[in-house]
Image (cartoon, rainbow, N blue to C red; front, top):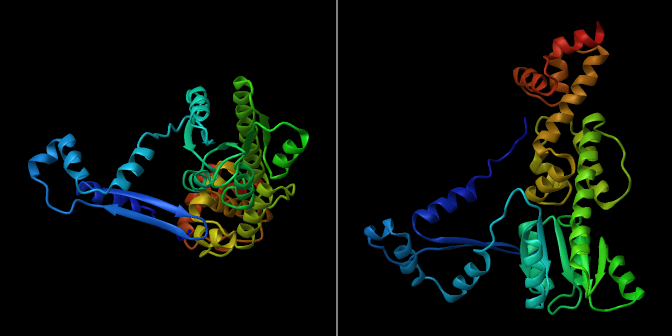
Length: 335
């Protein structure tokens, strides 16, 4: 079995903060780390207030700095609908950003950023399915934002559509050379933008299904040398080379591919339809099925050879994967 943490530490912290009528938020910066900030009232509130949310919040506000109010206002309006893809909209013109958001909000969850620097931070923290970015912006241009997204293993899989008022093939080529998926010149037909976004996300979904099918059939199959395919190829090879190691964990896998466990989870799930834990277990079991077909090893030997410490758990996991216990599987194959 894999050595996994439960991942509930932050969730528990959040619950304790809520019990004390406080707030918790996170700020992340590339190559610098993440800062989790907990805000709690500095004096005890009257217990009677705890039955009245409006009063509690009103009293709490007296203990919170202005910067917290601004941060809260910036994030409280965003509620992600799990049924919709998420689009990060990076545009410094407030009116134009509002226009695009207003036209996209029925089809997508919309995250907003008013410049490339904030767009980069939100891409890291919120993992959108696609980025739509203006090119000419303060702090960080759309070109530089696209370069950062495509050069970082945590975000290289996110497609980018660049928008610009500059006309000419040279400008378009410059945008596409950064790794952008598509390029549009202002003013543009909104329906075309909507169609482009849907087509790109549809292609991503088709690629995910293709990866999922390939992983199910051949765990170590070679792939075309694109950034995303190189990533999943490296993941599959690492799992394959550690398939007999019972102590090989998702944490070790994330270290070996130089991404966080959360990023690893998101990328593998989007490409294969499986969590990292499920992918490792599935490859172990498919290798076990290959060994059963040879008829040279006992079930106990095969279980240990594919990294299961417990034969009982191996048999249970094998049955869940193939709907038959290992001994019956071998009988069917070998006659």
